[in-house]
Image (cartoon, rainbow, N blue to C red):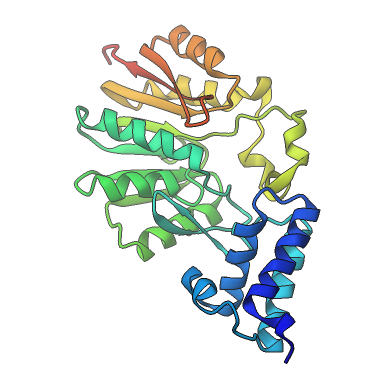
Length: 286
């Protein structure tokens, strides 16, 4: 068998194809897909660069590579994405967890230190935010709600695989499945916040993700407004509401929360120095 079929040569050719196709991370994409095809860890690629691959493995890798070259996200191809160092199963029915969202988790953990009680994650998807919080706060009950039953089931499956038993996932629209009178110390959400006409919707991985989890009316603020309005009936006194949002929406979200009676309203930046998370505390007497 030709040396052209070695691990090193196969990776090199794949990286070149991915570069030409416009991938933002061709080397990483190629390595992840080859490891998936071989069912081997990344260290295998470094340890055995000269290993000749049989045609069956090459064919399997080529099939995966073709999907990526067509633009399909790597996370959907391999069915998994790491978030907060937790391996999460993903599916086309949910958004792919992104590093920016870990900023929301960090802020939630900080506020949770002085606010005892359950935590609610709205629009939980894979369960990424809820499970990250559950892993750090084992004595707290973390709830997750998603409109799609497939997403709710996926989040439950991820919780089971990670042995995070302090979680509860429900299906329904925002607060719909939550009983009246239930209170939360924190309510967190990464809701749809992209405008329908946003050109980013036609580029990259987003093209393959569910529009219902991305797009909102009213310049991307409709779901944020709905959640912020309803959350006042579900937050414990001094409870915090926090959103991930678009990098140009910080001011609008702050103004919205202030208009609804929230205090201590502030916007935090992500590690790219973009406005990313806005929070507010609801102190009014019930």
